[in-house]
Image (cartoon, rainbow, N blue to C red):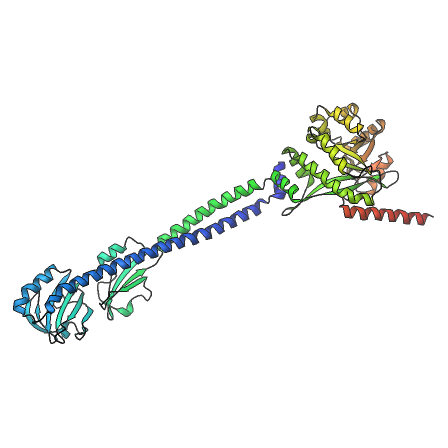
Length: 530
């Protein structure tokens, strides 16, 4: 598995990023549809208001002009049918949708623009007309000459004679208004109501007003005329809702994808390592190294640890190798130096002088022009003359560095000891043992784990130990976990041991407590022996 994927698995949590991205998309969807619905609702509402105002103004103008056209007929003396018939016919012909104009005297219609002189009680064909009102309006299912077609009846009272005036029947067609409203998909119908009767766009017949829907979208009445108009529908059409929701879903998916991409880029392991340094997520744990002869601690290995605020503890081998690949090992090692120097002030108070302190160096740091300066600055920040320093390097450091001999000489000149780490895991380690001078040879834990088993690595371990003796190298066995392993190693002359049998890597507080416990056990053992 690629290193980036190993580190990403610990510090990035793709599932969590996916969930967060999905939440971002959901929040965007909610915000988007809320805003768009509000804007659309506002625009539709304003459009409905304009339609209502236009219809009201238009109808008001129609009735006002009709009223003005009929007003001269109400002027005394009371008109005679024979003398007025031609005028009535002309007014009806040039009026807007006028079916007939009737002259009424004492509640009797005596003259019509359509038929001329006749005599018929108004109540017989328009029983709901209030002749005592100055202006009255009502709806009829039909008139005597056009019985199957609804009409609007307009009554204008003669102010000089009661129950007399002008009765006008008007053809009402709501289709033009519905066509005007049809541009707005959310409009479903219109209704005109006079008294308790209604004419609608969804029925050809006059309906009782009580049968109309109870929640009109808009309604208005004409000033001075007892008639009300209703507009039905919804502020948002189903088409609008479908379009907004679909657009919101598509954009939310896009935002989720962008969010996922940005989070992935923003949370790259390399960037997370630098942020971890800045946020103080790294700390150092110290694993004791035991002298095989005395059984006492003779040194410590400083191990960098990373506790991510979300992912928790990240394996050291994962982030260290990834840092090397991403050219971040130098700032990471400098941060290790800073943390060790900070801890050393407290460790000095509890640990004996002369204790060896080992740190791992990467090949790229050894090749860095600032390497010597970094080491010098770090040692200057440490308690003077309290610790002896051992730098652990791998075979790769020698392969990658053309100036290894010069660097190793400088380190020895400055009293720094060198340990070759993970010995035996590379193909040319023997060559470097002959070429360079080392102080310690660290036996890889993989060899130690083979002790007591019939494996092909056991003979290799014997050969490594024998080689170290011939070269007069101190040996440090890593990963010692059982007493059997420790006994086997000491029997073959391994000088130093390190592993869980003695202690796990410890924080500063734990290390001080462990060291004090070891001292107490030695004192107790000495007392028992005496």
